[in-house]
Image (cartoon, rainbow, N blue to C red; front, top):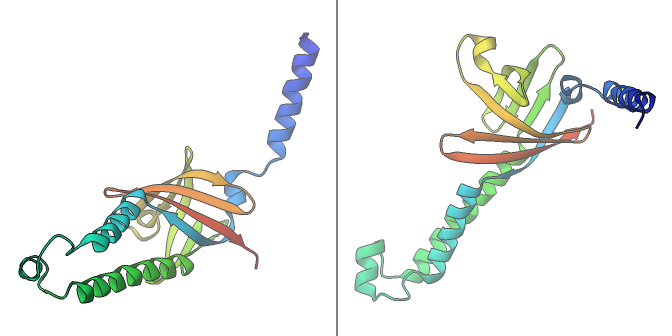
Length: 174
């Protein structure tokens, strides 16, 4: 490859990348959460389901009473399954009620089941930072790795205590 071809290829690449909107411009707008993937919570949920499939099958009613506080395992299973189903429904409702509204002035409004909250937002390396401390002088500072950000999809990875979550959002047209 001669020098002119190399320069032309470099110039074309520079033009293509300079025409793409920055992350900051791309994130501006309203985003609705569509999913949360959390391997630790999914595993715990699956283990509870497996436990309910086998509980009481190897023990008599006296042992069941000592272990689970009841000798009626069918009722126990029904109650525990209802709790798991309620947990799943609450999780889905929380997802459907979560919205991020990013503004050009670095304000983000967070809508959730808990109500409305706000923070300053900015990018640090490849991470999105939601910073209540910067806005309010106190509160949390959440760091989320940006896995994908385009015109229609925002995917974030974050750690909260011992849990790892990947959450996806879709852009909402106003």
